[in-house]
Amino acid sequence: MRSPKDMEIIQIDITNACVHKCSNCTRFCGHHKKPFFMEFETFKKAVDSLDDWSGCVGIIGGEPTIHPEFEKFANYIREKRIGKKLELSRMPIHDMLKHINDSFSLKSKAGLWSSLNLGYYKHFEIINDTFSCQLLNDHNNACQHQALLMSRKELGINDEEWIKKRDTCWIQNTWSAAITPKGAFFCEVAGALDMLFNGPGGWDVTKDWWKREPKDFVDQLHWCEICSGCLDVPKRISNDGRDDVTPLIFEKLKEVESPKAQKELCVIHQPEDYDKTKYKTFTGGNDYMEAGGNVRTTSENRNLYPKSFDVTNKENLISFIKDSKPKDWIILSSDKNKAQKVAKYIKDFIINPGCLYVCDGIPVFNVLALSIRDFINKSDNLDSKNISGYYPKDKIIKISIPKWYNNILSIKNKNKRKVITVLGIKFSKKTKGSEVSK
Image (cartoon, rainbow, N blue to C red):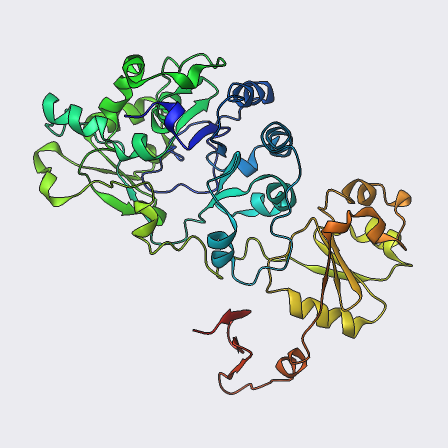
């Protein structure tokens, strides 16, 4: 086992509410009768307790971006851990999976774990101003989640074998310690189990809590007894939605009125049928993703793409905002044809709602932008002729539509699928957007 002081990451669990109910989730999402949302003062105390710790402080859930105070949390952790706004994810993103692999690193002072949902889109700007460490996984893939709710005593694992397995658990040795609303824990799954089963809570979140050594974990090791993270147990594709459990754990889930247990979304494994030679536990922190080919998101996940484009001109912008109450992107142009061309070109890129994009001289901006949202809400105060004046210079991004794109727009074939390759980019009449040719 590792001391938290020797870890790369310590997580702060700000909520166990989630948009998913994945199989064998490490936060047991779907089993909670009522999710929690950490209070800001608790979060502040958690961040402050790690002032002298040099690793990455992560914000995790559940899905952290749906916490109602997520923006406040992100601002605080950036001020404390980073000290300045970062300049990430501002250029249009054509391939999100490549962007994830190329752009983010664990070597950061602050991190975010998210499932790339609409909450991420809502907070896209502040996320990429704050977190250079982002572990993103939309769970619409074939990643494998190992069973966590199969107790070792039910499976007949003797004490000697158990202690060896427990002390070399891949989760505790490669993942993180954690802080929940109920205290600090030597293991993030132990913290989640304490929340699920109404446990006694963790250590007080004091300045040096993270310096504890494995010999100090004794008062929390009882959670390991009902966790199968270190055992040779079944795995399941994450989006299957069912959990693998043993009978006594299933009874405990019913006692806490688990919605998943009530909806028969648990696969109960009888101890007499257990064959430990049939399965093999994970050993590394990324094994669950490697089992799915390390595919964290695909072009089919449209959560981060533009939702809509409204077109108006500078003279009518204020009245348009009052009457139409736009929710997403606005294109400022008096030339409808040019505006439509801009919309067609950028709709299949992921673009940062916090930036002002000037595409061939035409401004494109989002009502979610931190720079302008207050003025959008009070449109009488908006200087519609000087939109760029609201944005810092590093968030004004100039882009140009390539000349060859006019040829792409002219391709029309109603009878058959027509594909051409131009400059290494393949465009398909019957597929959404574009993909890099292999």
